[in-house]
Image (tube, rainbow, N blue to C red; front, side):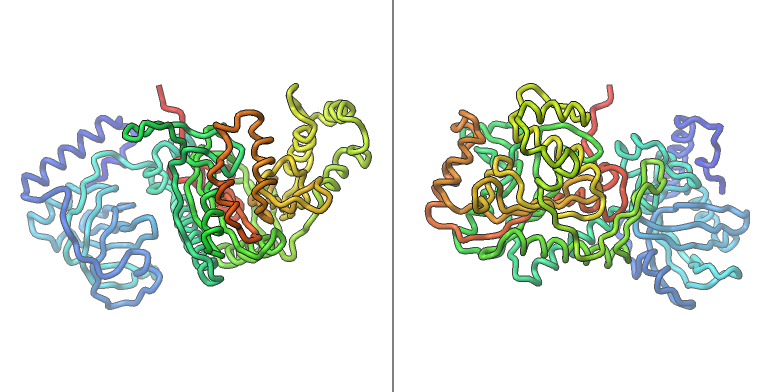
Length: 491
C-alpha cells in the first residue's frame, strides 16, 4: 500500500483528491468510512507501558506512521497519550479486506484486534487479526519525521500540533493533571470548590479593562469578569471559611508571550489566615507540583528555539524580600528620600520609560517591574507593597504599605496574596479613590454593603495557572500552554 502523504512532489490539492478517491472506494466496498462504536480493551499508551506477550487485545487509534513492505505492513497506532506498533500480514487478508486496507493512509483512525508479541528487535507489537475503519482522514498530516514546525500554524491549528508534536500533547496532558492535583491539594486541606458569575454588572476584583456585552432580556450592560474575588469574599461573609475557584477570567488588554485575554486563574480564601500563611500554602503546593510532574525542583527554561536559557531553582525555603528594599537595591539607597521630580529623572538614567500622567507610586512601580521583577528568576515573595497599588488588601501598621506578597518567578508575577481588607468603611474609601471619580461605573457598592454584615479576617491568593504551567514546563510563551490562544483573524 502506498501512503499518499509520502509523496512530497504532490500538491495538497492532489493529495486530497487521492484520499477522496479512496473514500469513494471504501463506500463502494460497503464500508462506512466514518465508522461507529468500537469496543476497546486497552489504550495504545497503556498497552505499551504495561506490555506482555500473548495478550488478546482490542485497541483503536490513528495511523501515525506506516511502513509498507509488500506482503507485510508495520504501522504505529496511537493518540495524544502514546502509541504502539501494529503488524499486518497482507497475504493473510481476503480480497475484500486487502482492497479495504489499500484505501487506508497515515492519519486514518482504525480499530484492531490481535495478539501481542515482541519483534526480533524487542519492539512491543500487535499482530493484527481484524481491523475496522473508524474515520477516513481527507487531508494529509504534517511531515511524520519533522512534525509541525511553523509556530503560527501550531497555534492556529492546534489539532495538527498535537498530532505532529508529541511534546506539545505531553505539555497539555501535564497541564490537565496539574490542575487536578491543585484541586486535590486544596480539597485535602478543607477548601470547598465553588463557582461564581462570569457575567457581572460591575467588573471588580482587579484594575483591568473588561470586555463589555449586553443582556437583551434584562436590558442592562454586563461585563465578563476580570476576577472572581468580590464574589468569593461574599462567601466568606456567608460563613464559608475555606473556598477556592479555578476560574476563567477575561481582560480586554494587550497580548504578549505572557498575556492572553482569556486566562485561567486560581483564587482561594482562608478565613482567620493572613498573607504569610497563604505564601506558605503556595510554596508548598508549587513544590509538590514540581516534584510530582517534573521530578525535580530545578526547572530548565528555554527560548522559542528550544535552547536552555536558565534554570529556575525552586528549592525551599523561598526568599522573602521587602518591596522598597528591592527597589533601593536597583535604583539607589536614596530613591525614596529624593523628590518625585528627582525620581522621574532617576528613571531616565535607569532607562525606565514613564508616561506623563503617572502618579508617583506608579513611577515607583514601573521601576520595580523593569529593574526588579524582570530580573528576578528564582522564587521571591515580594512583601509590604505600596498601599495605593492594592486597594483590597489590609493596610500594615503605619498605613504606608499593605500586607501582601507578590510571588515572582522567572521574571514575572506568578501569584499575589493578601491579608484581605475587611473594614467596609476603609474599603469604600480605597475603592472610590482607585475609581478616580467614576464610582458609579467602577465601585461595587453591593460588595461594600456585604462587608457591612461582617467578613472574618482572611488570607487570599490568586495564581495565574497559565503562567504557573509555563514556569513548571519551561515553556517559552503562554501560547505553548493554552490550547487555543486568541490570535488575530487572518485576512
